[in-house]
Image (cartoon, rainbow, N blue to C red; front, side, top):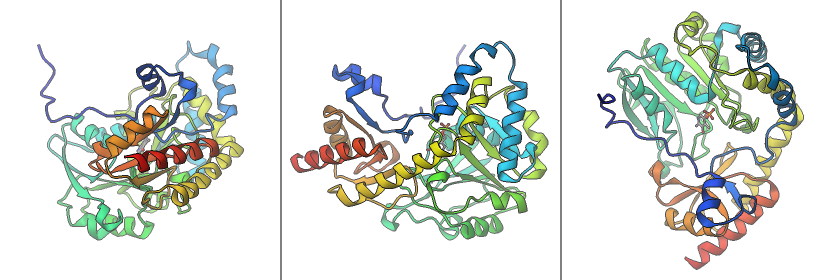
Length: 358
Ligand SMILES: *Cc1c(COP(=O)(O)O)cnc(C)c1O
């Protein structure tokens, strides 16, 4: 007895964890600065932490009311109906629901390269085929409908990431609309806005209101600082509302996740502070890092450092964990998450020293 043929499936490579690196280097976790996974350097919203404590003694019950409450709150915020909000176990879980709801075996999806690995993984789990379109470094990671359409061949799902991970580039709303106009009736455009809060541009949710072929992905892992809780959602066309009940893993978002999510949504001070910290850090990185960077709309900056693997290893020995982008197909780039002012300044100082020495 064996699992099915998984040879075309790739394993997800997460950014390295603090505890993992600390153990390997024999250092204290607290002495390390982790800027590898685009987490919130301020930690979770204090209101969310309080909600987690408050609801700890209710976890013997299935999260029915909390699920409905969070769905209703999100629906109101986005001016959609509750059926259009698909809560999930992280944004990744929401990607799975979209794949489950759309893909028949052998259907092809189109994903950005470089890009977020889970789009392709999720499609393959659901017996889909994966093709790529370039988000090219030579073209400043520019994203347009025309460029994507050059590789489009009737794909069932086209994934867009805006702000794009790992480059930080964006796609204009008008380009998303043009892409949706020029793709077939059976094509869903998924706009992944995991970093949407850090951008000054409007969400593509306006297209969900007016069209039946655009869905949005959002998460509590980034600006809300709840990556460890696993909470995200998709916003889907009105006509899709009843598909959720047919594809979702029951109670995919836990009682604690829903309660913490509700608390985090109302903690606007934490959200605003998190965005301000990221904006400041981006500026320090552009100005002070002795390496070319790209303007980013996310809470991270991509930098060209030569040999990314060597630079990331040398930085790690100095207690700074960044993302070596070799696995993204960018072996000359590292991605540095926006830290607190102190963390970001320390990362810049160490990185500049490493660049001088190598
Ligand atoms: C972080 C991230 C997500 C979602 O992550 P979850 O923790 O599963 O919510 C989705 N897309 C991109 C591009 C991301 O960077």
